[in-house]
Image (cartoon, rainbow, N blue to C red; front, side):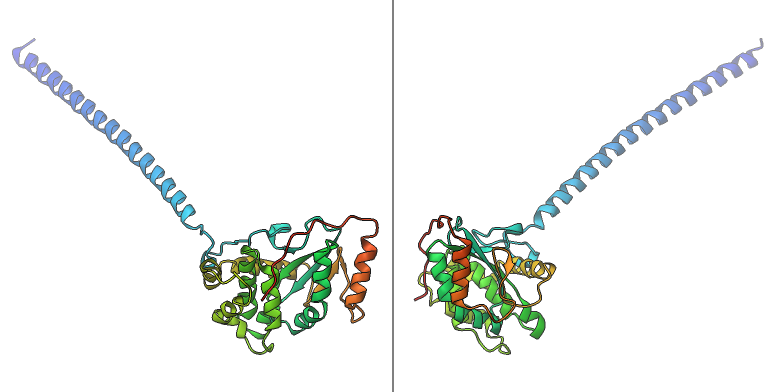
Length: 273
């Protein structure tokens, strides 16, 4: 083999070796970039999950209606906690009332039946379950039904629903006058219930803490197929579909339903001043 050929083969081997070294280096860099890229992707995914979790948590509110959070008042019962109960939990009969604080027919019912209802509650014969509705707001506009119902739910938080409920009906404005839409008026009326107008109650009214709950209660009323207020049921049976019902008849009906049954355990109920 000539020196020239020998040198040529040496140069070729060196060139091939150099190319292999370059290929190895390129492959190493590629592996490094792939691993690094994978780490970046994992970090990005983890960061995305963290952001999603954080955003999920930030969407929840401690009760502010602005976020649509449904905050039931303290002691609410029933499906979705949409019922405000008054009277002994173990009373043998239950009167269910769907009503709107702006509704004049509800006001007429309350003025006629309230003393009898309270008497039955206080004797342990009957428990009343209130469902709050915003029918008049929907028909005439305004916020009085909603704001008054929220304020009543705030009174329930304070254990003074019945007293404040009665004050609202005793001071109900004309149906066309959305006076209950003014929260200052609702707070002023709260002054008629001893111990109700506290900082907590005021904040609850001003912030509309239970607004979403009231709206859900009204939706349930519509879903149930009722179309007027008041709707009054005794032990699940509609008893106020005609003008025949009187306070005396209500009492007689409850006594008949409770025959042979033990009265419920009664606790003191606050009254308005």
